[in-house]
Structure formats: C-alpha cells, structure tokens
Image 1 (cartoon, rainbow, N blue to C red):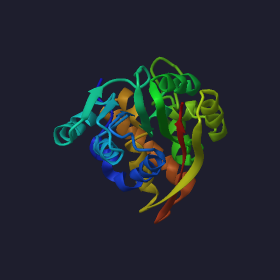
Image 2 (image 1 turned 90 degrees about the horizontal axis):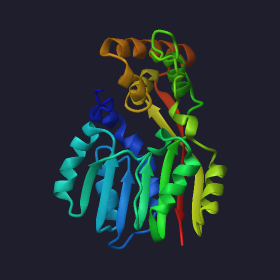
Image 3 (image 1 turned 90 degrees about the vertical axis):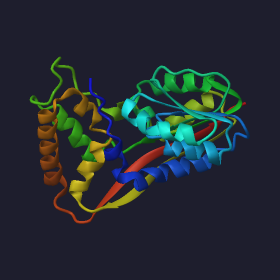
Length: 260
C-alpha cells in the first residue's frame, strides 16, 4: 500500500499546527540528560526542538510513515542524541523513559484507557506523560469527511463501517480520571480552542487532506480519491458557505502528568 502521508501537504499549515505543540511542550519539565520518546514524530523538526529544549541526552521519534521518516532523517544527522525509527505507536512499549510525548497522534489508536496504562508502564521513576489530541470531530470539517467516506462509491469494499479517528478520543475529565487512577502525582488537563483564520473554506479542505483524510487516501486509487475530495469540498461549501476569510475553530485536549 502506498504511504498516504504527504509531508508537503502536512507542512502547508505548519505554523498553525505547531501552536499546540508549543503549549504541550511548555507543560513538560526538563529531563536533565534523560530520555524522551516522541510517538508520531512526523517530519522530525519538532522532535529535534523537543530534544534540545528539554535537554535530553537521548530522544527517539517513531512513526508509521516512511515518507515522514525520510524527512526526519536529516535531523538525526544534525542533532546528537536524536534518532528515528519506523514503528507503530499502537504496539510500542518502552522501559525507564523520562518523558513519553505524543503530539496529535494518539487519536489514531483505540482504547485510550489501555493505551495510557501501557505508556505509563514505559516510564521510569518520576517520568512524565504528555499528549495532545484533536477534539474537533463534531465540526463539519470532520463530520462531513466521515459522511462522504461512507457514501457507496467511496465506502470500504468489505462493507465495514468507516472508522473515524475521533472515535477513541475521550472527554478531558475522563483523561484526568485515568491519569489519576494510573498514579499521577501532578497533572494538567485542559480543552483549548485554537482559532485559525484561513483564507477560505476551501483552505479547510487542504488542511484535512494532510491529516484526517489520509485513511481514505490509503484505500482509494488516485482517481477515486480526487473524486472523494471534490465531493467533500462540495458538501463543505454547502454547509459553511463561501466565507473569505474563514475562522476555523479547532478544539484540542492537552494533557500532562508526572508519576512517582
């Protein structure tokens, strides 16, 4: 299967996407020559920044996308102590890690209760867990993406229901409860709305092409995906109208916890 992730498409909104990363990083304590694992590292530039700013001795970035990791490889040659590996965060398990960090990646994995328990077990004494997940799956940009993907001409050939990345995302209060139950001695959990002024509603299409539409791109051929995007654009414009500029209110949940 062709890698559905496109580094150039993802970078089209790099400035907007880095805002929650900066806020999540600001919640983390320096690891003082310790170890960091970045789950879903993408193209690696933010992983390199995390490594330097938190003064880690060793940072591992993992991702399932070979295209993203090809971009990330340059940072491993430029930054001592930084490395990248092809791996699936839904299966990853570590040991003695000082900080497990996941910026906009955990929503692709089901069962967040079990997932967070596994990540907590990967920490060493005094370890930290920090993650950020989108919480905008009730916005037309995401609702319509799923609805169009379920239309007969775009639906999975096996007849299974279309999976939504947001199905696994929990309420902020539930994340706080899980982190407490896992033994967090400090935590910070919040819902934050990031307001992005985009050029138009059509720009939202380009935004989601780099993220939430990737599973659709993975199962359709090029002509099929182009037709899907055209249909999605049509539905989105029907719903939101021709707004120029368009204010995209994007909700995210940010969580940080430190353990004994």
